[in-house]
Length: 172
Image (cartoon, rainbow, N blue to C red; front, side, top):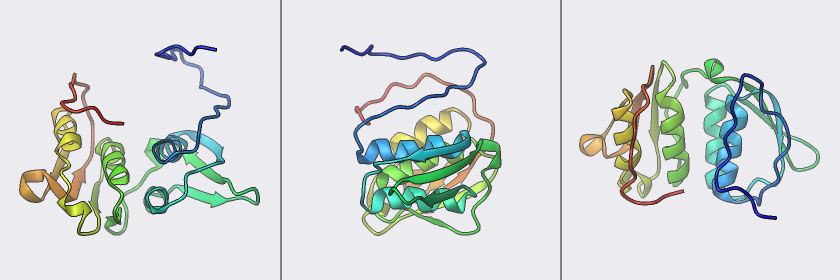
């Protein structure tokens, strides 16, 4: 069965259903993020193991999202929409997870509070321009070391305006 290259969902009705995809790191990060900003309970099975996904899960907890494990090895995320996310009490430590830092920067750019994202020495040397620049073009305030290029990143979120952005390098 061939799947369409694009899927577009329109309309005022909520999207409901089940989706089964392979459990990999990138999908696991995104599943947690989507469940966190959805409204209602989401059950996610087959999350990738490893510290990267754990870092995203912990960060979402710092933002007020309830995530618990169940007896079948899955997690249950109590999503309350983006409006329910709140300013973290402390710096969010992404350890060595560039995926966590990049995706959380995007999520936080649209929220009306301040967040600081950091990581280990290796992550603090990795460039974050490819995330920060398009967010800045949409009106987010993202700053960091080396002119906003390196973590720790300070994200002062708020209203964003859409823009057209062409990626200079392909990425997930």
